[in-house]
Amino acid sequence: MRFPVNATRQNRCPVCKAAGPGTNQATTPRPETASLSFAVWHRAANGRSGPVVLGGDLFLGWDAGASKHPQSRTSLGAAVRVAQLQAPRPDDGFMLLQFCSIACLRQFLMAAVDELERRAEEVGPQVQAARERAKAEPSDEPKRKRRLGS
Image (cartoon, rainbow, N blue to C red):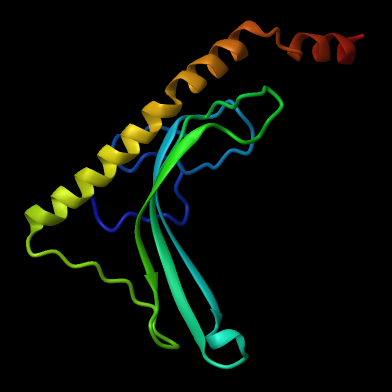
C-alpha cells in the first residue's frame, strides 16, 4: 500500500482494490463499507463576528449497505467518534493526538476498530433481516421493462 491515500477521486478500497468503497451511492442496496472520516467545523468566537474557532471530529464508521425499508436511502450502520477537537483559541484548529509509542498508537487504533465492530454487531440482526426482506420482495424491474416494451 502506498501513502498517502488519495481520497479525492476514490472508487476502490485502498487495501484490496475492491470496487465500490468511495463511490458513495445514494440508493440501497449498495456495497458494504467501513470508513475513516474527519469532519471540520467552525463557528464565530463567542457567537460574534470576528475570528473563527475551528474544531473537528474523527470517526470510524460502517455502512451495511442495506436499509430497513426497500424505499429508504438511509442504510443501517454504526459509528465511533474516536477523537474530538474544540480549538481553545480563535484561529487554532490543528488536531494532534499523541501517544508515547507506535505500540500505543496501534493499541488505540485497534481498540477503536474493536469498538466499531462491537457496535456493528449490535445492528447485525437488523441488517440480516433487511437483506432477507430485500431478497424476498419481488423486484419491480420486470414490470418497468414490460411497461416500456409494450
